[in-house]
Image (cartoon, rainbow, N blue to C red; front, side):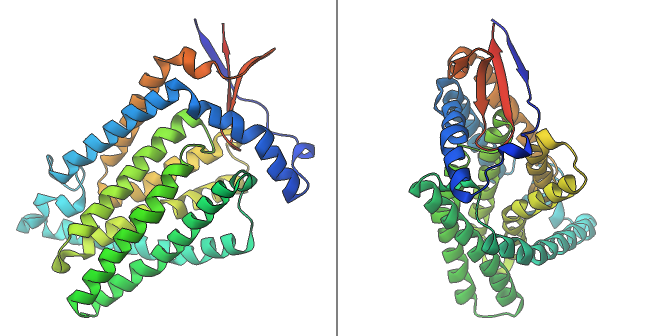
Length: 325
């Protein structure tokens, strides 16, 4: 039994919903049910299960720091940084993280403003649950954009360690309760190529949780590096939008634009936060997911059969059309 996949031509302008109500109806009747069907297949659930296990194992190893060097491990665990001969490299990497973090803060203003004046995608409004989740996610992210610079500013100013540590604990609790949960829910129906985006989102959430954990246990004297690492992970979303805007401006890679924007955004923020090798670990998560998925392909592809084969739509993004022969 073989499977062939092809991508469709871009949707004609005439098929774009003319009103918000039409958009919600269109998303409800096509995008979400078919995209959700991929997740509800046994193959996808098993693939997700193994990807989650792989992600947990990866960051358990990171916590125990099995490797050294700014490339192979997070800067916060780089033992070489404690050596006098590497102090300059450590300082330069930290400065680069600060510059990138400052750029992220600058772009926050434009991204948050965009969300304030533009409605979310129709797929997030097809049910009250989805609507509540996306708005909670946006509010949670906005709070983080305020709390991060506030904590770092108070730390630089030498404000009472007790105040800084309580604010840090509150931030970690907020992120865990609202941002991790909503991000995990939204990952189930991603835009783009599902078999790339779902494992990528799982691993990115793992990266984010890891930086939260490191921030939580960091002592007051060493709070700067884990705070910057968490800040950069939080702002993958900013880099995603910048990459997407560049590609859209030149009408490049229409069918894979969103997927590529997510991957390149992660590539821009991941290495400064967690070391360059994090990209190899992320690539392995895609391999783990798809090995599990392919080995249960019959179940995964038995979703909707028509005259032209089996079709999956990844909830508003580009879709994969497969045919079981």
